[in-house]
Length: 455
Image (cartoon, rainbow, N blue to C red; front, side):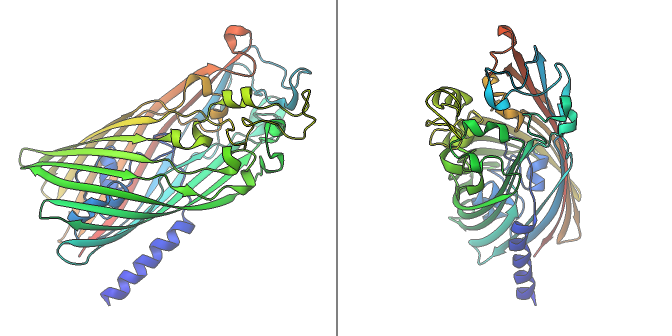
């Protein structure tokens, strides 16, 4: 009977990869955490794992959580996501500037994205194979981005880039199959195989065809799906009484190309998931408290579509219609979709996370704070209208209620204060040169709840 239940849970987990849309842009487009308990600690947990979702942070930690099943759901709201243009509004189609690539906006008026609420499920099971070995499976989202600017909110109803409704939608779902092994009672290592599916859609970019190496696959206004495989490795151990350390590395996840967007992303639609590194420490405070802290690095520079700056496009692409290029698409390595095509210009970021938890009777209380470096430079605000992942700080809290000997209820909340980035429009020189400046901004909140059974 118990074996049949486990098989059913595994089937649910696998099907969730396909059925669960995930849109969550916090640290760039990565989540600030996955496990409900870790989210209450601002995502910190590399050195101290507490549930069956721990493999998302450090697979070695699964050796210490025992046999258990966790399931939950988050309500996430990245609102507002918006842009504002200031300075002298330029005619979107002046004779000297083809393709209508200037931003269509009333100076000083904020344009907000629609689609303010997203539901993000997670599910995980950890099997205790013997005294030293566990096998786990976890399904979760670890990234995403969504913008949805209605054409009716722009002058003349033309749309942000004068091609109607404008925005992108990126969703990612991870199936993490992990194994951990205790070296001894206090130290463990672990590894995960990551099976990843991602979905992407772009609207309102048709006026960039003259800058695209593949203009037929630029702004499809429909979903394209890619799959990929990656690896994750970790160590976790107690190095002194009450002091634990942890480390994990997630490889770049090599994804299939988005063929329907081969004219948008550098390398013919390539959109891999960047590598990450995490170091953590946890130490007891008194008899019932604990402080946890993580240092995480996300290597966006390893993915050209995300990290290539717009200057690559402006300096390495001869647009269609210019002398020497009759079209219909752009010519040169910097064109959209080309080998060195222009992108969002994101920098690598380092994230600092710290949290405190206190045991009290049948309850555990958590608070946390994290700070990330800004991934969007001021020079890259133009394309990041589509992906305004500006937030840097996360304030979190959480609570666990133990129910009987083998069940618990977990809840966590997160608030990311509004953060903005302002810079010059590279197509008109910016306000300092008689053109326009662009300001993008975002704030967020999230509530996640889950239930767990321990066996």
